[in-house]
Image (cartoon, rainbow, N blue to C red; front, side, top):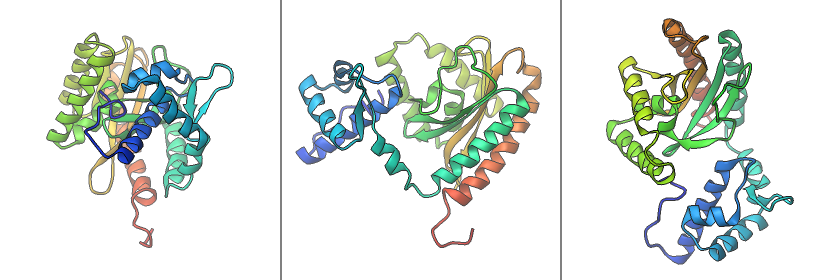
Length: 272
């Protein structure tokens, strides 16, 4: 169960309304351009349609959510983008990451991803590469549980073991509730393989024929805030290239960690 759909404890009515609004807003953002029907989003949040409609109407009024005219599906609204413009350092880091990942994807002829940690989930911030890989269902803005991606696994591996275990438990609960247990064995193989290599390694465990590799990006205090991933077909990224790929990822990680320290984590007024 995700943070967006997890039931909340009893709370004062004002706090409860705010919590419900945030849960709905997070859920709306998970489907990008696809959007949500009212009945689907109400069911996903465990709300009756009337309550969900009232909350969504308020969010639409404030432009945090919008309704597409053609099919009336709910999508993320423009105010989210406008508010995001004020985030200190994030746009500079996004531009730097897009440049770095563009260089990496061209040099390696693979698809490069930057996944930002968001609680128990990741959000794809950058996705760049020469062509669309078969089976790749991740694009900019995609939000998924951490344990479903090699990048998320790289983040989990860098976390405190107790925190990582709690995140993994929440991810598995959500997977069982939404998709059943069909993928759990494959996802477990990816985690075990990654643990054996010391970084994120997916040798066709989740999507046959696609190899993917990842390392965590870390703040100056050592906390993983994102993951850098590179992926391609098994023919282009065979196991024989793993040492080369790891070296490329580590080189790019150092550059991105340095950019993040300067752009995201610098104390205002401190020396650049």
